[in-house]
Length: 427
Image (tube, rainbow, N blue to C red; front, side, top):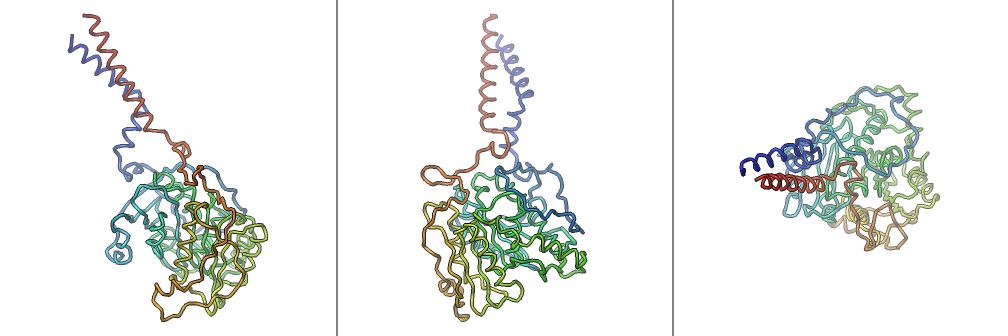
């Protein structure tokens, strides 16, 4: 009879497992690596030869919930030639990864402490590739820092793309990254920021207009507010190659770049934390137009803008000049109650640091952040104590596999016990 009882219990377990989709999800979620989990996702769709009509020029309303992530994820070793620049993030307490998410190459640096942290995406300038810049410093502020290759640049397999198309494709890429980081338990993807130099600053602006999700903060360095006759629009990128033959004709290009110019959409920035810095001798992107843009956004009621205009500086700003300010700026994403928010600064020229100074000395001579307080919510979800709250599993439209697992195990135990009971009763 004992054998019969054991057989009955075994059959019940097998039957239950075969019918339990939730338990299968639970087992898979616990046993599969990240790469295995997304191995069956569709292959990345590479952009190539797109035209102006492929992109809408109307601003996109922000989504309140983040879409489910279902795409491919690959993790690769950090190349030896990059280790001098990135290895410092692999010290005790930090992690750095070389990832390809739906074909988007990136580096990621963050504290490996399991604590919830906001996300900052760094976007490089035209003709460059992913860099870490202040990654270590911002990671020290408990921020997850991601540096990407824009569409058509670096190791990206997109292309050929006219520069405005590369900007818009990178906006789509950032949507995908937000959806991926929403799956990580220690990253608050709803609380994210963007930072970029030149083209990277432009893309930060374009994302705020055309991206699916609302950034908490953006940092714009020597970028353009009026892309109507943006000279860099003539650039053409193809799988890391720059300066190729243009795809678009002049008339359609100027019509498109005029329609998407941030100057024409200040309402999209009216409640975003903003840090803007320009060189007053910049002959690539007009500092005067950027100041006009800043004033237009401020006129809509945004009192969360820091504006810096550097004297005698052309289209370049030594990163160390603003490293401290940028680090402090993005640190404010953690909790608006703990730190004062930036306010609109008076327009004033700021003398650059002594070129002979070291990087650390130059950083110390940058203008101090305003310590004036203002009431800032910045679309961050807080509890009564002011701590940032992680979206629940339901925000991602994913099953709560932990609860399903507990339920399934409990069900197995009940079935097995019932089988043994009825078997003994028959004796």
